[in-house]
Image (cartoon, rainbow, N blue to C red):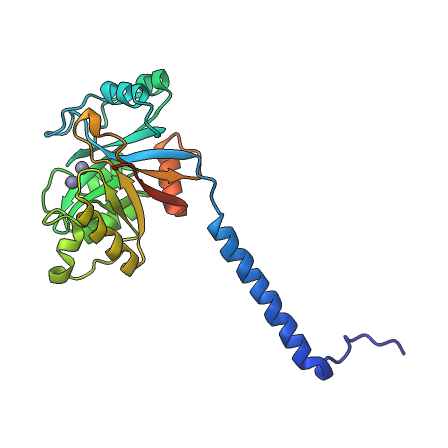
Length: 251
Ligand SMILES: [Zn+2]
Ligand SMILES: [Zn+2]
């Protein structure tokens, strides 16, 4: 009679277990290896800039573009994160085309934990909370952003008063943070260091942005992406995909 079952491996149990273990190790090594080499970063964006639309911003968007091109800065575009508002009116598509740059719009809001960048602002999200408030509850901003498909990122978290880590001793570590800005062009190196160390400790991912308010500060810090990004939807997807790296061009 023909055998229908696999041969009995009990005699070779040790060998078989060793083989399985080796296979697991090989798979793990490949995963780690592919993670190390996972990205050919193709696009660099400054994720934190302010224009004259912000009360303290002195830079015109067109001048940012001219500066980036005339100084041959190694960035492919920038995101305007105007303070306490979402600028739904301005259309920078002609400038973006003229200079071959990605120009996107987000927002910087203010919470009891300091300032927070919000990427992927929709009209519905602008109705979910008052962007002009200076004391929004961070967890509510995180939750509302998530609900509306946006991503909220505490910025310059290593700075006193306006940075998240200045408040975590007193208020505790907030729920729901996944990404923080670890390189900020307006922060001192020791403040960035606080951001980097706390982000590492808490398992957060890091982005970089210049926080420029004047033209010559644009591109001081930025974020590298593997994905090709030309719209805010692309950027939100890339942030959610967690395949990016903060870069510091300050020095
Ligand atoms: Zn700020
Ligand atoms: Zn800012």
